[in-house]
View 1 (cartoon, rainbow, N blue to C red):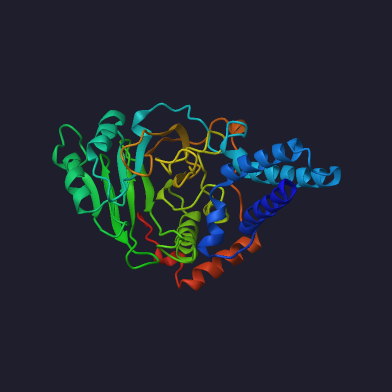
View 2: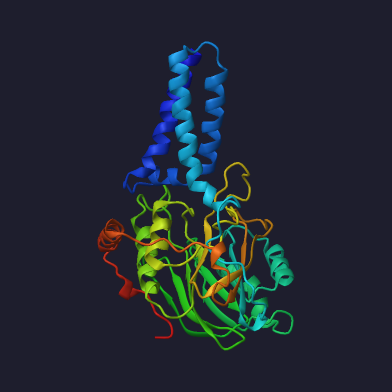
Amino acid sequence: MIPTLLGVLTLLMAAFTLLPLTRIRHWSVRIMDFPRLQLAALWAMLLIADLAVSQLAFGLRVSLAVIAVAGLVYQAHWIVPYTRLFPCESARTRQHDRQRQVRLLTANVLTSNHDSDKLLAIVEREQPDVLVTLESDDWWQQRLDVLEANSEQYGYTHTLKCPLDNLYGMHVYSRLPLHDASIDYLVEEDVPSMHAQLELASGDRVRVHFLHPAPPSPTENDESSERDAELIIVARSVADSQQPVIVTGDLNDVAWSRTTRLFRKLSGLLDPRVGRGMFNTFHANIPLLRWPLDHLFHSEHFSVVRVARMEAFGSDHFPLLTELALTPAQDTDETLDAPEPDADDQAEASETANDENVSQQDVPKPGR
């Protein structure tokens, strides 16, 4: 009985591990991209069981143990880059001129969560230059507008507002001026994104894109095509930008997925979490099922001052705080180059964008 159970569990785990290697876009396959840390832990537990159960014949024990080790190593190689065991991709800043720094707080508020006071307390404590909220509807706008109305206390006089009750509302409250700003629907007619030039206190301007594509799931899109297409066209749009660039939001994808890796390759943007930590922002209420869904990527013009996950405030997401300095990396030995796309990557990206009938030309280019 026990040998049979271990064999079945090994086969199931192998299937969960191998399925993401396919290009099948159905949500039931793409969801397996998410729990790599959890799958690594399960492989480790399975390995211990294989070695501990005395009823197993020697040959079967060795076979199951080898498969478990292979599964553990495979899952680990995806998540190790998001630990301190790996070199940083984004340099640590040596530039402390606050005039050339920008602090961003990204928070998926969860539309049904009405604990706005906790989020406002985080804003008041951390003093971000830019607050980006996702899933914010009219109720949330009414509560957050105090940031704009009470300028003496908060100072968020520059805003972009798109309240929606479909879980894809979005707001930006900024202390720094926003130029050439727009709200656009890049792929789906009810899923907005925001684009602007952000003017730092130094006068430097940064191209910013705020995204929240719909995920592949039983309640949203059956396939990942819409999400993937939005990330691909934004990536291609910023790839040739001479301006400093920041892309942030709830991308409904994990840092190590095929699509996010493709985004990084196509865009040339850096991920400040590499070498620093996972900063798992979802699910705030289920500690054993957490992964990094909220992201910030930046161009090589920036170095990193701070990345931190804030405390829970009633949402199913934790807020993500990222502080960057506008300065080239000064210690290249501690950083990695952004990954580059090959011909297969470009072909896959073109196919996905064409399937949704979108292109990089659909993405606003603030400042051009």
